[in-house]
Length: 397
Image 1: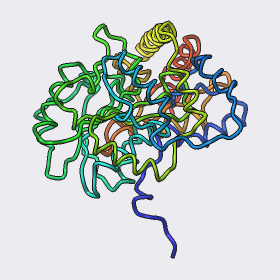
Image 2: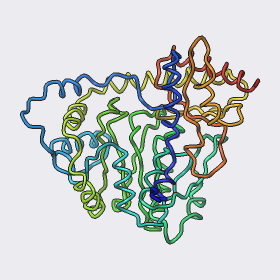
Image 3: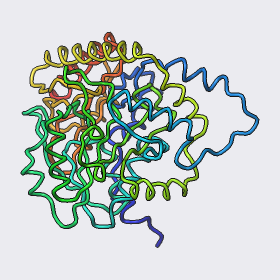
Image 4: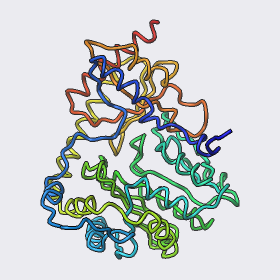
């Protein structure tokens, strides 16, 4: 009997996308859906990036080099320099989105049965990439009760085994909006250097930090050039999710050369998207200032409205554009599907991402959902109103 692989069957469905068939069915019934489940910003892509694509003058759409065009990598060197990160273009490898950057990195530093320690909840695809590489995710739990703060270093240390190869963090965090401080990065640096581990930092939300301290990259921290691997992407920064351009950044030449072999196997990142990404680097700071102000306003409105629902627990995010919310319900998977299949308020409903999909530990956080505040303020207010009425009706059944 033919069957797919065990690892293929073990890869979980995306908590962000698995409810799409129910949303499509609701749309066909004429129900308007407020999409709070996915980090697809409604912010306009910078005109300079779109114009670069519109004005392409080429007769042959050629491959780029496997590590990305040199011209684009040179531009990235300049971009990172503005963020106090000094690099050469050989320390940057362009990928087909941040997802490919993560998968190539995990596959390059691990062998089957190796382990990666990740604070949970975490971006759901970390699990998928690890399973595909035959790697075990070792979760270290964080709690909504203390704002999903980074666990104590001795808690990380207690999980390190001979098979541990890396610690992976997301900063700012998806799905929590947590931002790790300079001091916390320094503590992690000491740990990975002590145990000769990699420290992988997914920093794709760098521009979206709402604290006075701002963002501190692992690439700014001295003394771990061989340990530090940064994952980055254009998707959120420039509201260019469909471009699928990311990168792996490291000063470890063996790591970069290993990732390069994987990059060669898929030939090259998309040429046209690199042209857009290169142009986007010239986006003026005013764009980011305006976007940051907009997200702060959306975050504040969302938290204010959610706090009006009895029994809701939510932490005010310090970065990114997500928050993890504990709802007064029995099961978020059931509730999220029910909201699409059976509930509407004036022919409107909401779509959320069940929180359990962001945890590796089974049977915890079953009442949590991730909300992406990527809608304008008026829509967010209405969406929370619908959510409130949905909770009331669901619990009354």
